[in-house]
Image (cartoon, rainbow, N blue to C red):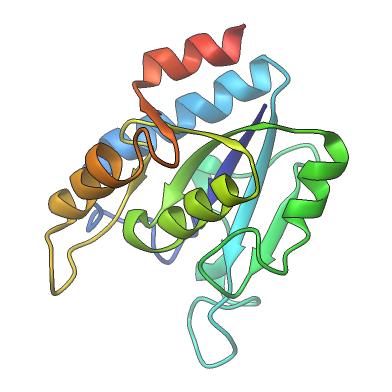
Length: 174
């Protein structure tokens, strides 16, 4: 089992996110439990390219301070929505023989959705803890509608198991 923390970068982790405080609290708890239980924490960062604020070399590109990697935890950089495409993450997980991935991070309707679906397609068992992913409003749906649409309707039972933080912690402890 690994904990995959997707796109929790300084530029986009802010109070515009749906249930911001709960999201931050849950992600911190997942990271702490993973480290306590010797579950590898893997980070993914999104790079939008040189004409963007969200690019390598800019302060906003770095991981949000409260989730910061420690002790050489791995970071994979991507430039598309899926954490698996062209990053080396897929090969790394296959070589380790990993089957179960807990996914948390940003944004529900972009990179989390793509990463969950691609992970499923590659045969991983995907676990999505409640309120450990979030997003902002878009022109079609509010952030709450996007969150509920993906977590309660699209992913659960199709691509992933969407479960409570408590259920996730139990799985991490076993």
